[in-house]
Length: 420
Image 1 (tube, rainbow, N blue to C red):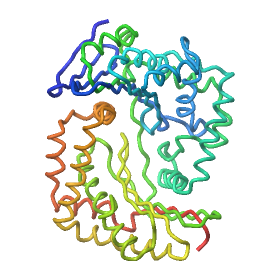
Image 2 (cartoon, one colour):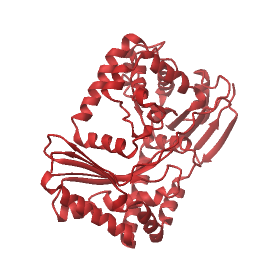
Image 3 (tube, rainbow, N blue to C red):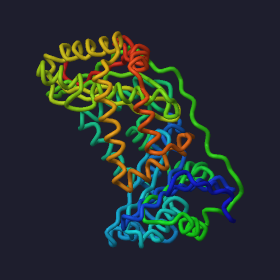
Image 4 (spheres, helix red, strand yellow):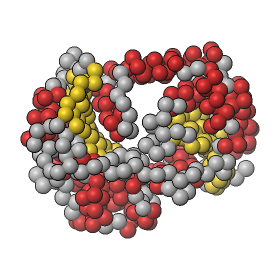
């Protein structure tokens, strides 16, 4: 079946929307000898029920145990034996399968990725082994306090929504999942209309379409992608304390913000950078350098299709935890009440613009950027347009956003560690 519509997004960027719903986006970079390719499916932990928590992630693992044409060892050797790499991850909105290879090996990479996404065996006999692997992954989180406190925080801020579920699941849910559960997720979500293919590197768009056609990606009737999940109200201003026998208190303070398609995310990203985005940030300078209360402290702003989050992580001694929290609250209250001074906003803009521009040197980053605008139902923007959007954020806008989202009383806090 021939593709329906191809449009040129930029000098070397093309997008094809296929009759069956598949979207293909590519960027030609003739100066490199490699290519990064990814296949995203719009199903992940955000589509799960509480009882099946972790099923999308376990499915992502199990496809590597064998396909109709390759054993697990053959999958592992297929690209590594040529110097390439093969990877996968599960997020809240999407599950992705990616390869980074020499440009000459791209047909092989697509063949392997198609095997994983379209032709996995999902055998009952493999499930018990891979279940144990995921349980060990869960044990790793339980043994890593800065990871665990993030899991607990997500659970606390989204108590009644799948965004609050652990992507890995729990020992109980993972232990009860059956191969039939994984096959059900695969049948419902792993179809062309629910997928996005993105490729960046020394490639030609037409050649990618030909490869996809040979692999059968254009076959089948039109089928719409799975809908985005609706988001319940987040729990704001909640404090949760979990006692563990640890040397430090690990804490996350944060709140819900805006979705990946909301234009206000640029201002929130700038606020996050200024407040805790590096060594020059307010929190690093105040809490670590001036007060000496921690080794690690950082802020972040993340966005999903149906929500966003602003968060702060800090690790500090039990005896100084309350002092560290007070200092963090003081900084948040000042920014929420007064906004960012012009010089701090300017520095944050330089930081964001620099990181965006430096990412252009990576074919993998370019591939992820290509897929991102499709997955989030956004219009494509050139790098120059993105930089202009960042530059256009005003002091008044960041002050308004800080007042709306960053007040201390809005923060939900999870504290993990020894008792006070």
